[in-house]
Picture 1: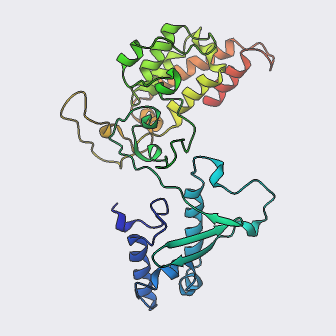
Picture 2: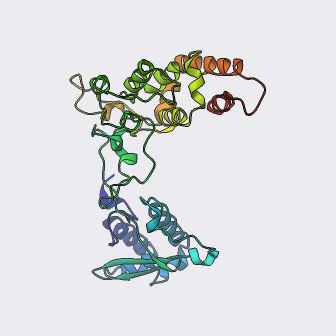
Picture 3: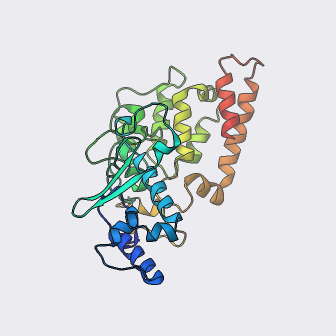
Length: 310
């Protein structure tokens, strides 16, 4: 989708976008409203009431999109302070200033959308920012703030190792491996990190890794749960359904061909469900064997997580 077909691009700037102008021009043409280009931004801000009076859903959608993007902020410093707000305090008030763009006020302050860093679903990148191979999730970082807009992914080996890990060779050179409070041996941790370097294959590999009578006990550890949650429920880079161009060489120059239309987990279940389901059943059976009947037993957290995971 080209930029001139996108509306409400507040993460780009507060200016009146080309997509907004195209949309409002078509509405004005259909309804017989004045189509002066200088007047169009005032329809969007609500200062010219014709659009909002005839299409009340338009200002509502504008505010919903603005709030959605404004809440994707690196820290709470950019959000309204904690206090007992009233519902009317959340109502946004818009004003357009030619040459300066839109000003949005709410919660007794000026509200702003922090810019996103554009990503490429085919860019391997480095560090935990590229844990999903780029794309939408990798673009949630402001250009002026290096802190993440969401917690670091547990599925990125760089976060677990504390150093940059992009390949199996990087794992072999690690001097210190995470053991999750002694629940995994260094060799087992090394194998886990190796699986995480292949996002497209890690879903069945990681689940099978913990379908072991000894390693299944590690499911009670919060960090291990974070790894599994990231592997299963982070969707990864997206692409529309259809044919995928096979890369002409191996290793591929990018991971663009590894994008999925419905997320890694659903993609795995729809194409090769047997290994995933078998490993899940084994984990559930093993955790049930560890159940002592007490809610405060050391294995209770792992059992509850396994049940929730199923």
